[in-house]
Image (spheres, rainbow, N blue to C red):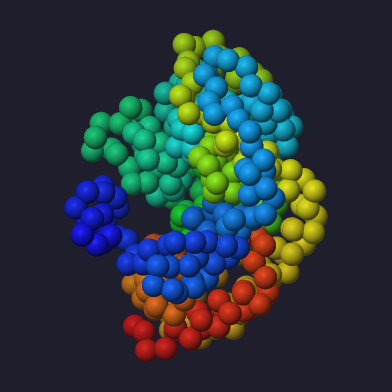
Length: 394
């Protein structure tokens, strides 16, 4: 039984999948079982921000001596150390960090905390934005579960996220029934939707005015993806709750975190809450601490590099002769190209993969999430491949 047939028969997964088997990954490349070397401009959808098999994280994992497991009610030095670092480095006035196994669970914790603190049961989110795969996360995200009688009501704000969108927000918030507004500061799955300064500053003021919490989902945008440690920093946001995951461990082990203000945390801890069995496994904590320490020591040079390579990619994209009008969105290494044609982006992604470049198909376009460490030579090779794919497409 070959791998393709075995997966089709036994593995539950999304309907679409690629037809190559990955056997190794290093830096900005993945190697396949048939000997191909592919440039990875997806990085597990914002997971491998420092590149695959990064030496600093691999070294830390090799030096890990245990323990192999810590029960949720026991003490572990790494938990306190990591929680303190995340609380102090997160934007705003954060006071406490809660453990999770991934982004979906971090969002679940955030939604629960918002309800516990405000004693309200409605939410507002950005239409078609993604926040995870559980019932509650999909009730505020995409695809929505309205037909499944969701646990609570969620109102949707339609992009673009500008001054007009603020009018939509106020219509929902003025009822004072909304526990929280949840959003990514840069909406990655919406072909890198970049909110206006007016929208973000007005949103924060409006949340305070109506007693609504602001939940910022940095699961994909955190840890340098947009050229700052957290995308919230572009707008000087001070959220009530922040959700983290993905690049926090550089793809080595699963982890999520939900960071919140002391006031919100006090309300949440007053509830009968429990913690995940595998939340912050010691190996995950080791990977997270190694990742964060690398950022702490190399952040200035790393973000300077991101700025230069990001500018180069944007310049190349703007010079390309796309058949349909291209709306090019760039924020650090979060890059989206949106077209007026619905299938044009999918055709580009398919041809690019055939020629050795992994992109991510998005609604009406495609996205690119290169490693922050991608070299200029590799970026140039990727742009050459992309440009070579544009001919004879409809």
